[in-house]
Image (cartoon, helix red, strand yellow):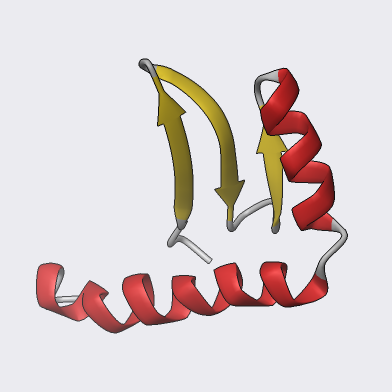
Length: 69
């Protein structure tokens, strides 16, 4: 539960949207980002894909960077 996976998308140094594994959904920060976040949040396969990436990227590599955990 202490590991957080964040997938963010930026354009011209402005964050458009973000997936936060603690929230379990996308959050939009611009008009386009909000529209896309709503669309992706209504797609269970997209949410499952991002949650699986947390498992693949974070949980499998935590012992490499923090061997004493």
